[in-house]
Image (cartoon, rainbow, N blue to C red; front, side, top):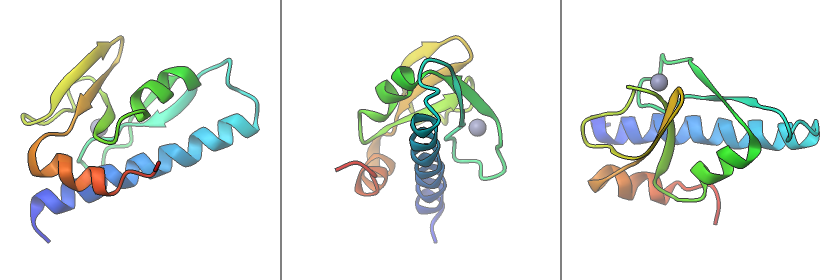
Length: 107
Ligand SMILES: [Zn+2]
């Protein structure tokens, strides 16, 4: 597998895990509080989390190419959409953008 495909695969996997975490948070009625979401960077060994409200997570997940990262975990080809306290929202560009869009879990 080429590195761009593997990176897109890792990022998409983190996104899918976070989608499950969000459902679980809803079930537990924790929506007023903050839930730990995994950093969605392309490093498969990264286990850092970002604490977000359900609303903040929804804003990240609204786009098929946007990802949630711990600050400074972005790659040079990521376009930073928003910088918040402790995390950044980035958009995948180029071929990576196309690959992650194909795996967008919400259609
Ligand atoms: Zn990371």
